[in-house]
Image (cartoon, rainbow, N blue to C red):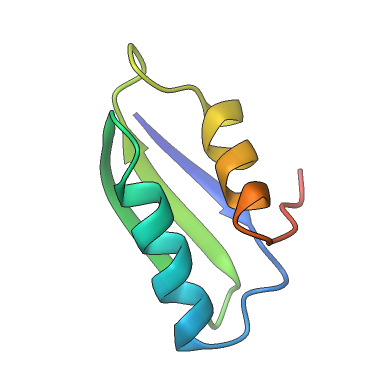
Length: 68
């Protein structure tokens, strides 16, 4: 399953790396793509292990605002 999140506070490659690393460490995450231009994060995940809400909360825990 895939979900895309709008994260307007992504402004640089450090932000991108921090989000990628933070999400990649979660069980059930298969892939993370951060697009600085569109300020979006696309995540592919196993829906039996993770929900879109889990991922949104993790991005927020990392210090980034997630738009719904």
